[in-house]
Image 1 (cartoon, rainbow, N blue to C red):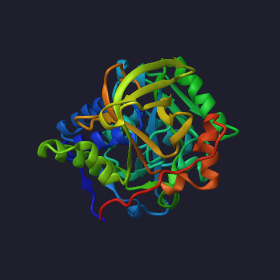
Image 2: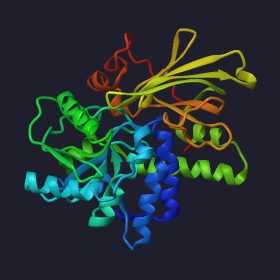
Image 3: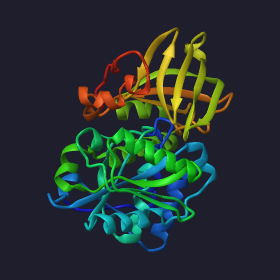
Length: 364
């Protein structure tokens, strides 16, 4: 299959769509867009390949940020963290990395592999391990379906680095990486172990870079045509509108390397007299109204600006914002019984099981 060589306009659309898929987390897509754009302006290329283009013995390295999104806006990357991770993993594993892939497609982490990919002229697989963003390392389709635990690595903008050569479980790997990221200032770049091309073809959430581009393009087209970008998102993704309203309360704090809190939204116009609360752990987890859960992980709860369709991350929420709260369907790989053990409501401490949104077909 032919490589997709990204342009600056492609990057802009991908960043817009990745923000929506980030469900409030995944890091700033705008800052990641600026860094990726600079790679193109430096004369480098960013290549996207279809998962089916991978050979069985290709070695694909997943990359992404770890930490609190609030910190990520204030503490910028140096730009060579991913390149250093590739070098460390190759040295420790004795394997040559032939492609990169995003750990999660949500937020800035969608674009995180693009910096080292451009620097090292490696392709990026059109897919990821979440189809959205999640707050913890073990919450990927890769780990759910059998990715090795080591070697994994972590590095920060100051040049600090950690390589994990053994972990007893994916959950324990998260504990190790989270503790190390806190000492690095709650913001670092992470890599989990290389995967074979065959494994990625089976267990990556496929074509999510394309999905981000398609969502972003739909939003930008609606803006240009002066039509409703919220409707454009819903039509493109087969999602549902939960409420149109105003943010009336934001409880937000950084705890144990996560942004945690609750967002309260009071309805406006046709939704007047309604009040929705959304629990936060880096991402939006559960939407509740009058004691009833209207949406929950792993389905995607997305908050966007009511007028522009721009995604609003957990770190940006503030009183008075006019927003639309949407729910989009989770990828099928995350709704199996084994996956729900890692990414369903009970994995976040809730005492109820996953109830999926009623899906509407996306347009053909």
